[in-house]
Amino acid sequence: MKKTTQLLGLPIMGIKEGMQKGIVTDFMIDANTKKVKYLILREGKSYFFSVVKVEDIFGVGENFVTTPTIENIKALGNTESEMMEAFYMEGTTAVSSNGNIIGTIESYDFDEKTGEIISLDLKDGGEIEGDKIATMANDMVFISEEGAASIPAFTQEVKQEKPQADAPEKAEELTDYQKKQREFLIGRKAGADVQSKDGSFKIEKGTVLTDELIEAAEKADVALELTLNVE
Image 1 (tube, one colour):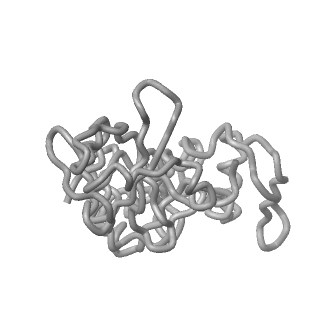
Image 2: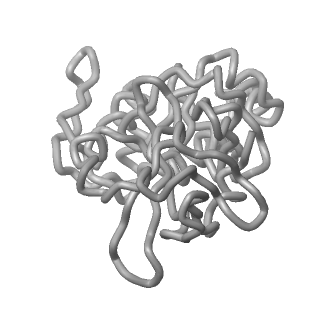
């Protein structure tokens, strides 16, 4: 098992040739299998990129990633169609299945032989087991409720009580996950029309999201739909 941060910046070495060919700069995930499929490599300071399949990795050490031969390293253009459908995990937002933002994914651990994602590391220090990933889409990773419940800080935030209704002069305080959700949405554009079930609330495609609009979406119970349809 290796953490992505351990591989970033490492050069890849072909054992047969004894030659280096690029350094690890990113990881390409197959969203359907939820596994890391390729390591993305950059050659020197150039803008020439290539890839190597995880299954062609022989080992990962402190100084090099090794592959039996540099012939396993292919030009990035050869995987163009896969790139279009691939998912890139780091920096994406983890969201619970019922629509609560959990946090930002900073790094993750994966099996360097199979590509299986073992765990996700959140920016605030939380950790989510890889088998709790429900789906990956639109720069978001959806986590099962069981997975979200395993994060003590997140669970505590969700259980916080709202201020009493008999004190209207005091503004309702936002929980941390609501703050994270608003920070994620504010300034983005709606990627599609979003409307409440009764039709009383609607945000049209292309609308720039403000704090007031996001608050109104929360009250209309369409915050999750809005989160799934932003540009």
